[in-house]
Image 1 (tube, rainbow, N blue to C red):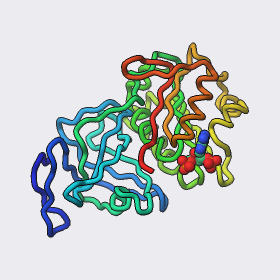
Image 2 (cartoon, helix red, strand yellow):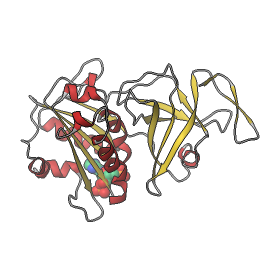
Image 3 (spheres, helix red, strand yellow):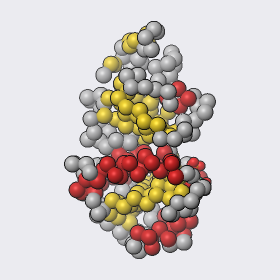
Image 4 (spheres, protein in one colour):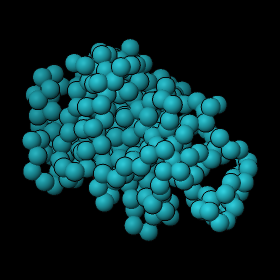
Length: 273
Ligand code: A2P
C-alpha cells in the first residue's frame, strides 16, 4: 500500500497519489470478450468492506484522475480485490483501464458503500440475485461469502446477457466456487445458477423479466412463484433492467429495503457505461 505518496509509473513520469486513496498493484487481468474483462489488485491491509459493496476506482494517469464506481466482485474474506468491467470505447476511465497489465497501479478510494448487502435484506428462505451484463459483479462477491448461506437456504443467481460469450465470467465463477475449500460445501446444492441469453440461441433465452412473467424461471427451478413470506431479491443491471425487475418484484408483494431499513429486495445500478 502506498498512501499519499509518489509512485514511479510507466517507467518515466512520477505520479502523485492523492490523500484518501489507496494505490494498489494489478495482480491479474483476464479478457473474456472484446467488451468484458476482469482484473484483480492487491488488497490494502486496513481496507474493510461488506460483500456486495462498491468503491470508486481510477488510474494514476493524470493530475486529476477520473474515478468510477465499481462493485467489488471478490468476497470480503479474499486477500485480493477483484473487479469485472465493461470496455467502453472512448470511456473516460475504461478506455485506459482495459489496457492495464499485471504490475500496473490502480487507485481505489478508501470508503466502500452500497445497498446490495445481506444486512439490507430481511431474513428469508431464498434469495434471488438478478443480474445483467457486468451487474453480476456484486453477486460474484456475495455468492462467495459464507454469510449469504448462513442467512438463506437457497441462493438463485440469474445472469442475462446479449451473447453466450458474455456469460463466461459467471459460468467460471460458479464452477470454481463449487470446488472452493471455504464455501464450496455450503454452496453445493444451494446455489442455483440460471444463465440466459437474449440475442443468440442458448438453452434458456429471454429477458429475466419475461421469464418471470411467463413462469418459466420458476418452472425450470422447480420453485413456487416469488412470495414475500419467503423470497428476497437483489437486482443489479442497467437502469431499464432495474426499473422493470423492481416493478416485477413489487408485483409479487416484495418491498424495497436499504441499509437503514432492511426490506425484501434491494437494487443497485451496474455503474460504468
Ligand atoms: P435485450 O438483448 O433484449 O436488450 P445491456 O447490455 O443493454 O445492459 O443488456 C444486457 C442484458 O440485459 C441483455 O440481455 C438485455 O436484453 C437485458 N435487458 C436490457 N434491458 C432490460 C430490461 N428493461 N429488463 C430486463 N432485461 C433487460
